[in-house]
Image (tube, rainbow, N blue to C red; front, side, top):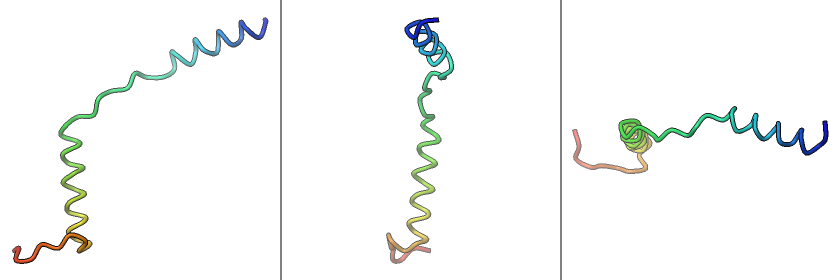
Length: 52
């Protein structure tokens, strides 16, 4: 096989091996934001005075 044929085969395989990117679920993004806020609150980097 020539180098061009091998390159064409490699590109075709690489295109089939990669799954299509999926959009992120909005609920997952919201949970990530909430977890980040809780962690920041517990680290006292974002103090909230007067809370329960």
